[in-house]
Length: 301
Ligand code: 3HC
Image (cartoon, rainbow, N blue to C red; front, top):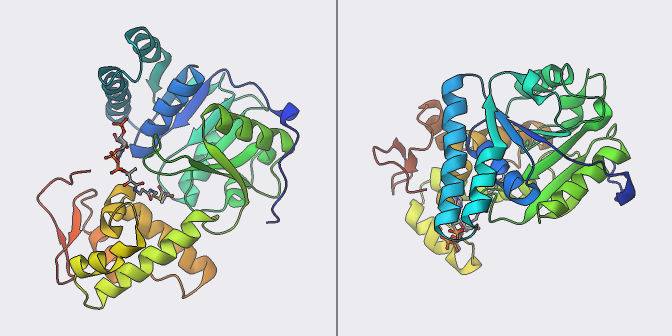
């Protein structure tokens, strides 16, 4: 768990093909970022073909949106379209040098993904995780090459927020950390090298903050009043809008991990739990009196 200084940049390995495991909200945003900045082939995957196709279509749609806004030229858009592919078979990751997983925030699921990936990728391929709070060391346990597992934690919206937390677990080797840092630089992100501690740095602070705001609402303060009270802090958005952006299920998972790992000071909101248990992701909100409900309106985000 000890933090370490950045290793020699010369140790960084070349990244000629990227794998993103998952085809959901974070995975597709990551794929677009890798495509735009590295201009290398990017393969995404998910558990079934329908999800893969939705993910690939979302990536194509974002490339077209960027082209429509003249952020990228038509030739560049065509090149990026051709660089993305989707699969349900991790064997298609065999020639990836850098694979990042952005699957469900569950340790066992992520472990299985890395275990399966190891059967296909070369021994020097970096296996990165976009986990929000799970232990990177635990994720690497039992692998043949745990030294190439590194945390690579982005923030939503990925295209806009400049930070990436590069997480070094005790077993992570210098070459993998150097490759992650060089990749972050190529992605034009500000990388911070942090230790493998619960919630790393940002979520440790963010979840404590969000937990307290949700706690005030759980205890009876209307959402609008809590938002108005916090406005002078100059936050970029309401805590409840941010909760929708992050995803209530992810926020709940992170809150539970921090609560289990760091104790009672991390509040797990009963309203948040109730909303997630209603299992309608993306459609959650609070009534002004603080009681949760499932909205029929699709979130604006
Ligand atoms: N997804 C993708 N892109 C988005 C977006 C979204 N949800 N929201 C805004 N953007 C893009 C817009 O498309 C626009 O880009 P463009 O110019 O290329 O079209 C750009 O952001 C600016 O949009 P706006 O003018 O609407 O921007 P605002 O000034 O209102 O800022 C914001 C929007 C960047 C989302 C800002 O409100 C913000 O920073 N909010 C806080 C977000 C935050 O804290 N995220 C961290 C969550 S924690 C996390 O992810 C970690 C996880 O482990 C839990």
